[in-house]
Image (tube, rainbow, N blue to C red):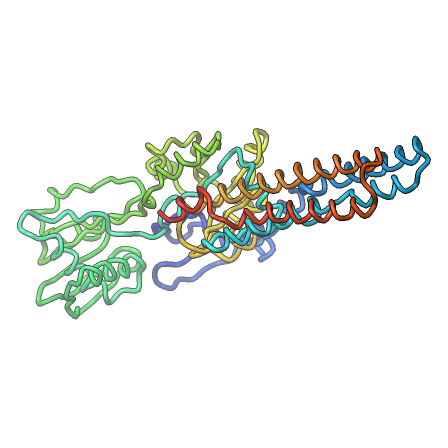
Length: 451
């Protein structure tokens, strides 16, 4: 619920939020609040309130339609009034074509939606694609968004006479008997390295602390450093120093009473994250804010060197909404997240982007854009597609309405008959629709998506 990728140890009497996941053994839980007062119920209310309070954005076509209608009626009325010839008024009405608004704009927008979907970028409608084209600030979640969202083995510190793979093989062999998420991660990593695991015997697991047993005839202990140290022979206890790495879990491994190594697990940044944020800067995004429920030291360690303007950590879902609303004072805000705790902020942002491949259904439902593939870098071509579609739509409106106004002027002066005006109208319609279909074609986004 907080967005932390690494399990956090809780003890008897500690308060935990609803929606938390138990990574250890079963325990007795006392509910201190009614279901309607739970954190998850609060998130649902926050999403609903954010969606209701979201400022409606007038569509591109809507902004021009009434003005065009008024100009058409005015020119037609003036032509009839000054010449006394109703045919000229009819010719003006016939040549006036609203197709650049009612057809060309939707065609350009839908073409952009179709093109984005081809690459796993699901944009929910025309308003969303128009908002995506005007983003000023980015508020981004950490776990599962900037980072992969899963604990991975990042290093193994083995004793002088021990190989790193041997440390992992021994630990994973014993951890086959555990259901703990960290144990499962070690087993999976051993399988990925094609290590042959032994069957453990005499296994005893201490919930939340560690596990001990016999592997290949040797007494093995795996778990937190304090747990493992308590099982070491007295001569080696004082020589063991605990590693301190922000946002990482250190798994200690001992065999026959002696420490043989430590395995470091952490939630790593996605590959290419720094280049992605720089690309977004180059697109004109002025502010990038990291908003996470994780601890401050972890958030700052992740943000280091990424060029992020502000780091906001240990945030609750409603505080993430406040971060989004604060940034909206500067301009349109894009919020990117993947978890249940991101859903209210996604709904409150001008454009919410959810990581849909491994994210939660709640975040995908609240977002305006869903990345159907687990690639954060799809945001950049998504913005390119949105901007190109909006530009083509504006071109269609400008050229189509401009030609229509010229035609109405010619008809008002008597240079076009109603039949000629009708033919000219059709020609303008075909031209602007064909222009709008350019949004389906390749452009700079092709090269970005091909990376």
